[in-house]
Length: 304
Ligand SMILES: [Ca+2]
Ligand SMILES: [Ca+2]
Ligand SMILES: [Ca+2]
Image 1: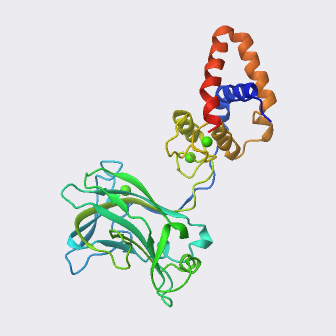
Image 2: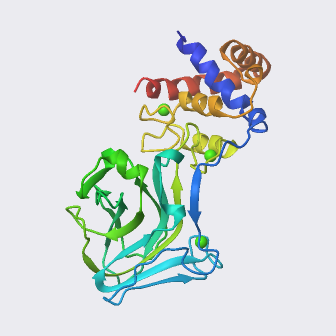
Image 3: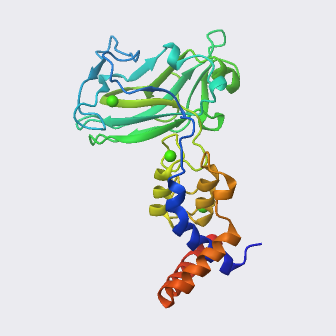
């Protein structure tokens, strides 16, 4: 059991020793299984132009990173909007590589209709197994790049065609598609007048514990996210223990996830109490007040 005062000292000391830990932070395995950033010429296998006048093209500049950042542009003049890929990078056994989600940056240009975007996964041809996102993601026509995540989990997908289980689907994906499809989820999508722009389309494993900036690494950058998010009860990657608030326990989640940090170098409660006590002795009343503020600031949130 951690007594309230010890918990408080521990939190303060964690803050104070964190910079030394940051130098020991290293890279974990990258979680991106495949990424299309459209730097190469062409559309990287993404197609969808059709008889309705739709066009797909690579645009060389103006992506999320600004000048020089190429992206994919799909225009639909009132026909179905569906951009898809069947290259080996986007097909095969997703289970074997622990794929859990597809993330991307998207923009819908001003003058378009809002886009209700869903992921569509086509399973083995023998069973015609087809699943799509249960909830559509609205891409507003405001010309702003934003990041979006599309889950591959059974809980987030609806089977709209064929037979076969979700596991069969992910074991033999034959095509990945993003499609305009307002409610309810369907097997064929709907027409729309819109220009959908995409970049950084990534097939990814689940976000690792402690990866608070979702870059596939456990590093100092995640500590910064935790620090700036501290106390927030809004949905937040830095809520590592998923208790609904960014708190001291989430620091521990990050610290424990740091690769290559010997156990002896990780501060634990007894050493932290000594460190905090020494600081109080050295710093006198001013540090004592900081301790008190921190205590009353963090204690109620930890009980949420
Ligand atoms: Ca790009
Ligand atoms: Ca990270
Ligand atoms: Ca938390």
